[in-house]
Length: 338
Image 1: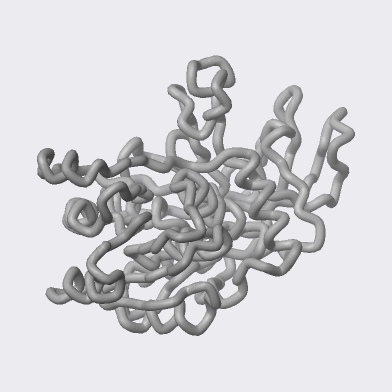
Image 2 (image 1 turned 45 degrees about the horizontal axis):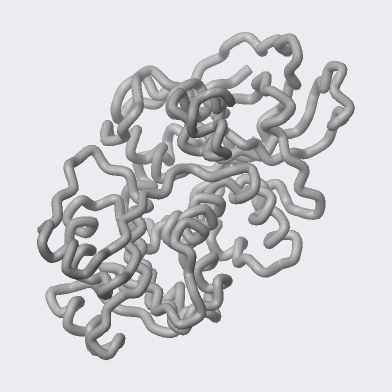
């Protein structure tokens, strides 16, 4: 079968490898769609934490069941969304229902080989039905779950002014689920005007967009009558932006860091305490997040199709990958078809 391996930064290699056997107690699946995540792009550039080479990328997956073994939860030919998080089930986080931040977390395509190949064997509990969704929508589910989980972590209220900084695929998911939470305002901020225009066009719950430049903080203060963000999300993946965020949170506000970077993030402690800011991280997603996103897609309340800007056959991935890093390419979400 075909497989693409990231052997080292900036080096993807497509090769022929044996088709895997179905492992005992697992389900053999054929990969049908692979979403290209910011995690994959960071790994390609050598900037991804928790990552070693060589690695088969791919954790945003839509698959088709080939051999279900003895499992009655699925049949040959069924399409499934992959929940790519291999949690231990026994650590303190798992026992408290927080398997998304399992102490021994293994994410497909990050800590262990993922789905950038034609077939793989997976535990059946990682295969989620998503009736009525297209294969491409199914491969978008995991991406949108990151935003759904972050929005849930923030505990948004009806009087809140929510600010989302960063409009990559993860940030767009945050925007959509922040809007669904019903706050008073949702302000989206980015350094790219075309991305702000995209949000204004496609997301009805967005009340304002704001360009991030040298006057950003002043404009945000004007938009919020000086209060700043009651709930702030940073989804930029940029340490400078993440540090700047501490100046953008309202007194008594909540700051959620959605991004993951290989850097230390610092803040001025007296100001942090003066505002009594609640600082939260957001990692991965839970099964409940997956179920919520799938339901939202089935009910057609999530914008999906406009997110898919670049779709290529599997055989074109290695030639196309580097180009997806170019801001001028206008990539929101790239996806490979098999």
